[in-house]
Length: 441
Image 1 (cartoon, one colour):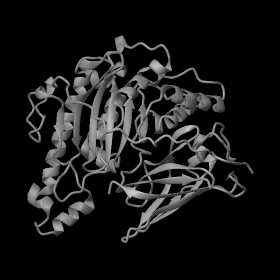
Image 2: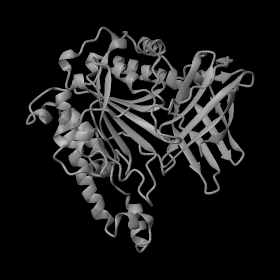
Image 3: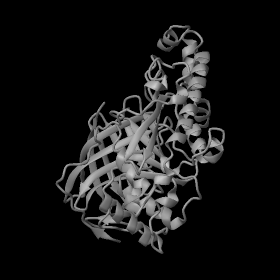
């Protein structure tokens, strides 16, 4: 049984930077002839389209997740307006799958009122330009039932009128029309002829992720990122084994120093998906860059994580019994208690590391919450080099490879343990303990 100590560093734990992308793109000429929506930016001649009516609708809670779509303009195939969609089928499937309200909400790809932002990214020019942003018009079946049973007295019914379903339907139709116009505008931004790359660190993928930066979603909200790019133009020269490919991914992440800000990341490509060794490189690269890579390949609504019903954050201390250091938890959980886009972050002798957590987070009405990680979710094993069923101990990785986490929160705070029946920290059977307090609400 591997036994070792982990040393903690003294540097401050990384925190999300509050950054924002300034809206300054020249207007969407195609949308200029369309009627305004929301009365805010819908006339695209004055800037990118902005449809925010449902972002903070009275009586309807705002979504706790935002979705950002970055389109690598060098991956766009230029064509006539009549042929543009046929020449870029994967791009249209991606954007419509996430931004056509009726389709996206029904499939579960996006939550009602979730903000979706479309950005055009030019790696050769070093620009990231907003094209469209808005919150998907909609309400769940349970929300509609509650509003209708209120007899007209709910805040939502007073704001939207007596026929909320009809209002939602009209807003959804306008939202779809505007996103299609925004997609057509991308044809004029294609710069595939300008695309050049002399290595992975200067590839469109890395350049655009550097431009994106950390999200400005506010406290206790999360972001997921979809990057549409031609993976073949950004794929590294991978090694011949899984272990070497993953080592290379972690190493390059340390060298480049990207901060994916605890995002779920989806790399959507118009071409064929990369081979397993390349995917292993990307998985390690994203994790080492503080991101959770969920997919590399074509678009599909299948397998997307559900939207969170609550997001809570904690700040505290993590200890192995000898050394200790600052720790933060971000716990996002669905209505059924499944953890999505949840992370534990701490600073150790090898630097600051953030690791995704899978499992259940269940709270009672008295705010007594219980966390149980999924033993197959990996935790410390996400940082392993090799494939296999046996756990791999790594002294230079988060938690040394420990796979299990449990915790309970009461009014006094959260108290938890990270452990493993095979790998030990400090002494046989030893693990790590953490405590913390809620922050941001």
